[in-house]
Amino acid sequence: MPIFHECDRCTACCRWPGQVKLTDAETARLATFLGLGEDDFIQRFTRVNAARNGLALVDQPGGACVFLDGGDCRVNPVKPQQCRDFPNLWSFPGFEQVCRAKPVTVTADEWRRRVKQATGRDVEALPKG
Ligand code: SF4
Ligand code: SF4
Image: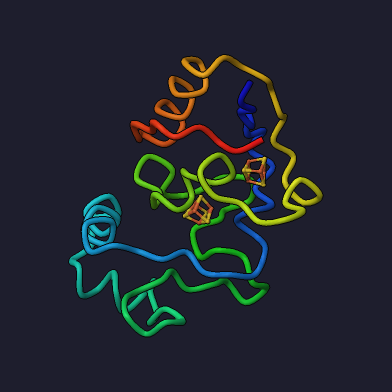
């Protein structure tokens, strides 16, 4: 039976080092959401990603994502897919030590339904394990 991780919105994943990569569509959506032109948005909130093949969000001085505001994401309705997909569609070894998402064993259909709700994605392949 697959395990779905229920996010408890602790925002740890918005604070740890790394990068939030942006697609062109996400960049456009974020700019519109903030009422900015795309060029202005890119100047203020993005940098070239580590692979130098696209954009990523900049960090606040302490390392948190530029859009983390207290315990909230300022762009939650249009947050990047990378943010929506964690931790059910991508994670890293030992993520449970820093992410407070609650693991719940569910049926395959329920897992797909919950993943769709959390990420917007239709996913056929079930997680291993
Ligand atoms: S965009 Fe929002 S959800 Fe994604 S890392 Fe930044 S604050 Fe967190
Ligand atoms: S995915 Fe995990 S680390 Fe991120 S907000 Fe949810 S519980 Fe916290």
